Image (cartoon, rainbow, N blue to C red; front, side, top):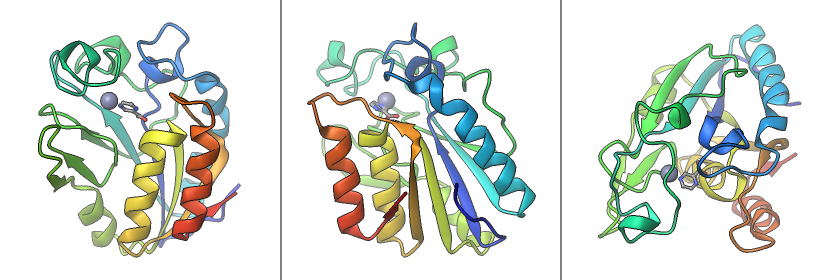
Length: 194
Ligand code: VGL
Ligand code: ZN
């Protein structure tokens, strides 16, 4: 459980069917188990007047992000499909920021990267937070070692006090141990991992 106030935002990363449902295209083990934890955080954040922002991986049918097109990931979160929808049990009480919409590698909620050149482009996330006077973010969701990690690292780099709630995340572990390494990297970068 994190503390919330009007200068804190809760960022709920990619709690989508393809990651959080066992039938999903890139199912992350235990993904569905975090939904009640995430909902509790949303309720507490809203009660304290904190902003809640959701990210949504939102890919075209073909993108170098996918293994079939030269990337590393199985097909997932193709826009306008069941897999891309936010998990049905998730409370949605805030704006959704989509990433990967033009075929970029959309790992962080703050930036997307050209899959070939790696060149970053900002999403609307940072300006939304700044407009509201947000100084601190709490990051939860999926996947701990991919999009949660990249989002939280970008938040630290941008000067937001950053907390990641372990119990409200799950990792892919493409390589065994990736999730633990992600928590170590986050702590080293200056995020609070709770
Ligand atoms: C993600 C792999 C590919 C994530 C998104 O949401 O963590 N992982 N695309
Ligand atoms: Zn993706």
